[in-house]
Length: 285
Image 1: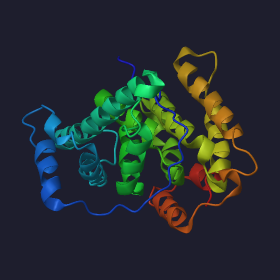
Image 2: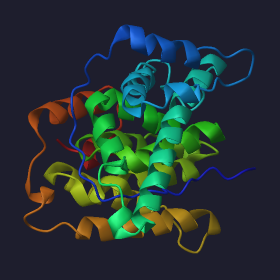
Image 3: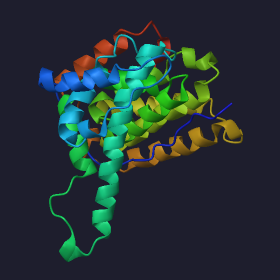
Image 4: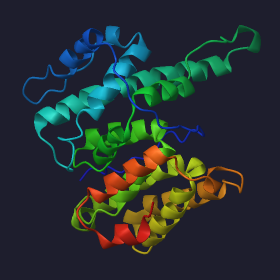
C-alpha cells in the first residue's frame, strides 16, 4: 500500500491572522467555477494556465470554491464529483504557490544589483489567501489531509504547509482526536499529517492553543511507539512541534488570548463534533 503520510514541505515562519472572507466578482469567478466542474467520468479537471496568470484573482476565486465544499467534505471518503472539484481547485492553488516559490528562490540567488524589488513572494501568496479564508476553509483542507485518497491528502497538506492559520489551530486539534482515526487503516498516517499542520502554526499559536497543543500532543504521544517504523514520522513531527512551541517566549502569542471571533468559531466547531470525552478534557476555549 502506498504510504500517504506527507511531510510538510513548507514551515515558513509567517504569522497569519484570520480574516473574514468577502465576495469576489461573480462574473470573474464563474470562469473558475466552470473549469473545476468540467470533469467527465473519473478525470480531474485542470484549471487553465491562462486563468492563473493573474494569481491574486485566481486565489480570490479558488479559495471560496474550496470553502464551499464544507458540507460535502466531511468524511475521509467522498464522492467522485466532490473529489474532482476539490483536486482541481487545490491543484490550481498548489501550482500558483509552486511557481511563486520557484521565482522567489531564483530571485534570491540573483546578484543583489539585479534582484527584483517587487517580485511575487510566498508571503504575498499567504496574505492573499488570508483575505478569502474562513474556519470552513481549514475544516475542508484538514479533512482532505486525512482523506483516503492519496492525491487529496497530498494537495491538502502541501497547501496547509503554507497557509495554516494559528487562529484556527482548533480544526486540526479537534480532528486529531476524532475516534474514527483510532480504527481506520490510515489512522497513523492521517494523524501524522494533522500533526504536521499543527507544527506549521506552533510558533505563533495563542495562549489557549499553546496549552491545547501541549495537551493533545501529550495524549497522542502515548500511543506513538518510537521503535516502531510506522511511527517514525509521527515521532519526528512530535519532536518538531515541541521545538517550535518552545521557540515562543513570554512576550509572544502564548501570552495573548485568542480574539473573540475565532474563539467563538472554534467553540462552535468543536461542539459540532459528536460527543468525545478526550476533546472535552484536552481542548478548552
